[in-house]
Each structure stands twice: as C-alpha cells, then as structure tokens.
Amino acid sequence: MIKLYIDADSLPVRHREIVLRRIIKRGYEAWFAADRSLPDVMKAIEEDKAERRRPFRDTLSREEARKIGSGIHMVVVDTGSDSADDELVRMAEPPALAITHDVPLSERLIEKGLIVIDDRGNEFSAENIRKRMSEREAMRHFREMGIFPEKQKRFDDKTIRLFSDAFDKALSRLERMES
Image (cartoon, rainbow, N blue to C red; front, side):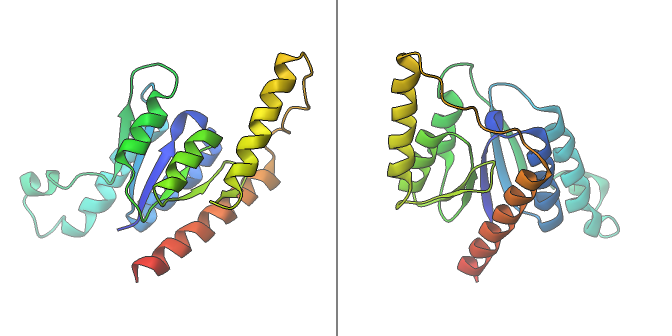
C-alpha cells in the first residue's frame, strides 16, 4: 500500500487538490498533518469513504459498509513550532512519499528512508539536502544582517505542473518498489 505523509500547513490548496484527487482515485493511505483541521481534507475524507464503500454497496449490509473508512487521515497537532513536523517524522514509515516545503523536515524524513518532494516539484535526496540546508542557513544569516534576498516567485500554472509531474514520478517509483 502506497503511503503519503503531507506537511499540510506548507502545501497550498491547489497542490492539496492534486494530491487528494490522486489518493481517492488510486486508494492510497495518506496522513495530512497541520495545527488545524483543513476543510478540503475533511471533505476528501468523506469522498474517499464513499469511493471505498462503492464496490460493496450491494454485498454488505449498511452497518458493515460503514466500517470501511477512508485512507485519508487529518492529524491535528498542537500549535507550535515543529509540532506537525515532529508528528510526521514519528508516523512516517518507508517506503513512502512525503510532501513538504520545510528543508529541515525533509532532511529528517530522508534519514528515515522516505522519498521527499516540495511544492515546486523539487525532489530532496541524501545528495542534495545538505546543500539545501547550507543555503537555508546562509539566507538566515543574510536576514539577520538586514540583507533580504529575493522572495520566491509566486505559484503559477507552470509551477503547479512541475509539482504534479514530480508527484506522479515519485508515485510511480513507489509503485515499482512495491511490485
């Protein structure tokens, strides 16, 4: 079973739509961690339950069918720095895919053996995460000195497409690993 771990606080709504559609369509297990319940994820949980129950509509009693739950889980954590990150790391079990924009969280998940992508379609790996951590630290020093580097460009259709392609590629890799 393909498992996904999503840092939902850092994933834009349009990206979550892509992820949720694929989870429901393919029947994956997914954990969305955030410091609040997300309406789009809660709605998807209900849609996923209905989709998973559909094949059994004529064979199971209503009571038995209601026991079939969703593969989507909304994990609400206490507000605080890194609380969602810590919960994702605690839950994560490879082989799996994680989605986060958080570089330190990515490093922790890579150490656990997960495939990690960000919201811009970049894949983090053991080879490139140290460079990303160094860049992050350098940017922090610049900000402390009052030098503000350029902000990241806004999400556009191209960025969404890059994310979607990277997501599909990572899922395909996981599916091959499970075969």
